[in-house]
Length: 149
Image (tube, rainbow, N blue to C red; front, side):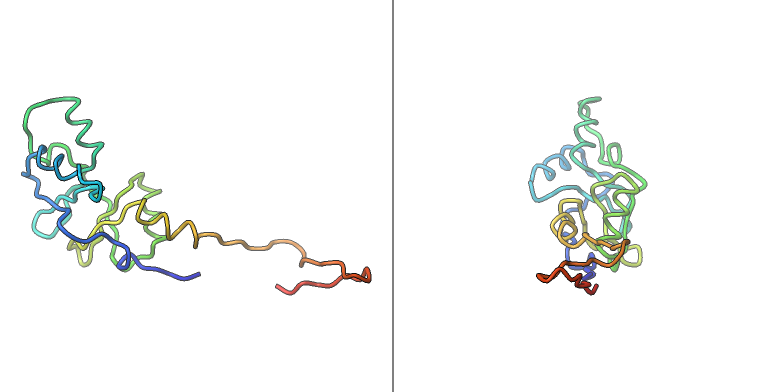
C-alpha cells in the first residue's frame, strides 16, 4: 500500500480567522464553495474551528452580532502534518469531525477535510487478507492446479 502524507493534500491559505472576528464575516467567507471550514487562530495556535453548521445553529438562536468565539467548536481535534491519510480518516471517524486542522510543532499548516481524503482512500483502502486454504483451479485434464499467493 502506498502511504501518502497529509502534507500532499492539505488545503493551505487564508482560511483562518481570529476569535474576535464577527460571525457575519465568517459566514461571508464560508459562502465560498472552496472554503469548507475556517480555523480560528490565536497567534499560530489552533483554538477553534467554524463550519457552516456552527453558523446555522448560531443564527437559529440569535440575530445579534457576536464574535466567532461564540460559535466556534473548541477544543479542536488537530493532526500532525506528517501523519498519513488513513490516520487522518481514523482521527475524523473517532472524533466525529469532518475537518482537521493540520499542525506542525503546534503551528497551523492547513486544513484537511473528509472530502479531501475521499478520492485517495476510496481507491487505496481495500486490503484483503485471505484466511482460507490456498485457491485451487481445475485444469482441462481434471487435475487440480494450486494457485500461488
